[in-house]
Amino acid sequence: MNIQRQTIKVTVDKSHLFTLGEKMYRESVEFLREIVNNAYDADATKVNVSISDDKIIIEDNGSGMNVRGLEQFFTIGSEEKRVSSVSPRFGRRRIGQFGIGKFSALSLAQQFIVESIKGKEKYSVIFDKINWKDSEHWELPISREKASPLDNEGTKIILNNLIKKINVGEAEKYIRQSVPLRAKKFSVYVNNKKISTQIVPGKIFPVKINILYGAIEGEIIVAVSAVDVEEPGIECRVKQVLIKRELFGLDKKYHQGFARICGSVNADFLPLIASRTDFVQDSEECKLFYKILRAELEKILQDLKEQGEVKNLKKITAELKEVLGQIREALLLNPEFIPQGKAVQRLKKEGRSENKSIAGISVAKKDDTHHQTDENDGKLDKKKRDEKEKTEKPRIVAEPIVSKGLRLKKFGVICNIASLGQEGPEAASQGNIIYINLDHPLYQKFYKKRELLTLHFFRLIAQELVLMKKLRITAREAFDWQSKILKDALCEK
Image 1 (tube, rainbow, N blue to C red):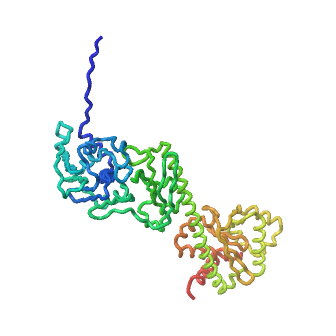
Image 2 (cartoon, rainbow, N blue to C red):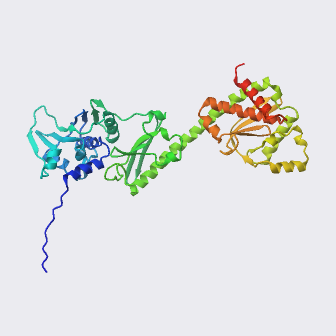
Image 3 (cartoon, rainbow, N blue to C red):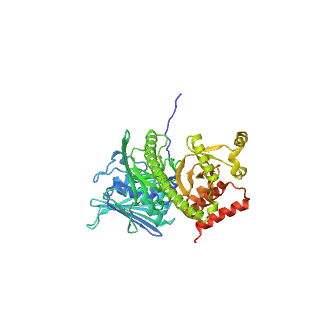
């Protein structure tokens, strides 16, 4: 049986190239990345980007392109930059790609012109969207002429008849993120304005780690203020081009400090997905990179947390000291509110007993009945005391983070800021010790506002001082006493 064979020509509809270009390039300005990075690869020291309502011009002073170079420029997926991965003049690691960015450009403009001077020759290619789509041919005509003595080597790319307008501010931001502005002898200008990397004041942590796959280099910055950080996260770059920002999941663990984290690290070995917008996450290189950077960043965030805790302690200590001083003045004006005689002995005894009973510090939660028992409570016989202890709520063990004392004549009170849990009371007292619950939602809400936190302290301390008297008074009288202490402590005399 004779089998006849023939070939089938595989073709791609030209319109699909434009569609693919638009889908792979998410933003209208993304084609600038490819064009400017191509200039970097061509050893340009200066790139001028001019943006107007109907035209974009990108001009560089690089090595230019001849016929062969232009053919590679318009070849999708050219291997040239992989074969020659280092530029000849400055030894730059090439980062651009001869991809489909020019088709993305044609989604913005009707016409795409490339003019390039190399040696004594000047070359020009006009890529007209409508004419090329309608033509049966895939070839693009190249014009060639002698360069004038005034012409310098380099390439100029012109987009005519813009379909979409380009926001200059967005273009500046994108160039700042996506091209190697930190490289030596390389500057980019947009409408005559030099684009520079953002300088963030803060503490710099250098990163220089060599691993099996290559080097990780850069810096992590802890900004002085979160306001100075345009967007939190470490810029992860490949060949100095920003791929994405990362906090490596630590923003979920550390609720404070991460808003001040910025910086940039470069790792050329990281494999990228086709659109160059992310890493190949399941690659071994990426997994190791994430593990190392996460560990580096966690050390910094943990240090920030500890520093924040020290700062918080100083703040709370100062506030509590000031509050107790004013409470003392109020009590001197109201000596009838100060526990005396048997009450003082009872309070001290309860405090000593509590400290001996449990390692650490324990706080007894009391109900209203417990607070209103009189000074003869200490004379209850053992049976009644046992029955009473059975009805009391469970004790809470808590280590104070701040402890300050207040002494008035023979009476002394200790005020502790302690962790009693979100469901715990705002405040509680045992003997002559007052505990303020830093976990309570009201404390957390008031903490960020100094005046509210101070008032919170005043209210709770005054409340517990009134309860320490354990007199048979009505709720109204108790509130009046508390109000009197607060007024004398807070209002000018």
